[in-house]
Image 1 (cartoon, rainbow, N blue to C red):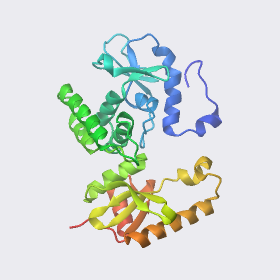
Image 2: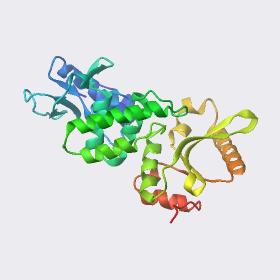
Image 3: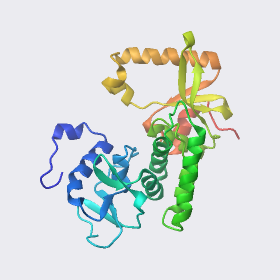
Image 4: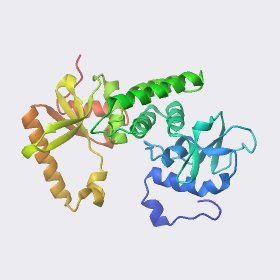
Length: 288
């Protein structure tokens, strides 16, 4: 990874992009000990366990307040910026920007898709909310705090996008794919959806649906492949058993709510058009 830092080929191949970048950050952390820089942007995001939607960083990022040793190197992209004392924290023994500063920086410089995924996850962590027992008050307080931060920074690159992202953020999104789906649904013209919608199930149980498209009386679910490939998420069941349970669950939801229900995956959310085509194949279209 760096001089004196190694990772096995097998371990590297088993990691998601966030995990790979975290290894890169750990390898670079020794070089920044006692320096004027702290890890920031995508590098702080992985320390905070925030998602990187379709982002695979080539270098670690660090921010400092002076030009001293500010030159970037092949492995480290250095930034010069103002950092308040509250902007610098320690996560797992490594200095990085605070959760709020990290979310703000990512909202400014990332693609809208990656920025929304980070903001949703940061809101969940920052407001301490549970996506299935949502604390609206805590969410609004965190959002107001971020709006105040944005007002203080003035006119800087990406500030307009950052304001929009923080206003759009919703901590009820469980996965980055759900966050990006919500963005594409908005671009397609659907009304703001309900998230993590409870549906009464058999024998007093509750089924949770990712997205409620209430304006068109439909449900939607982002179907990440991890739950079919990760042994821990299969809970000892075979893939056939999981698929059968999913079919029984969907049949119940459709039958009791009389709503249409569509599923989509990663391949449908890169841009609005594939998601719109997928929904249309289920007879689900935005009004007007």
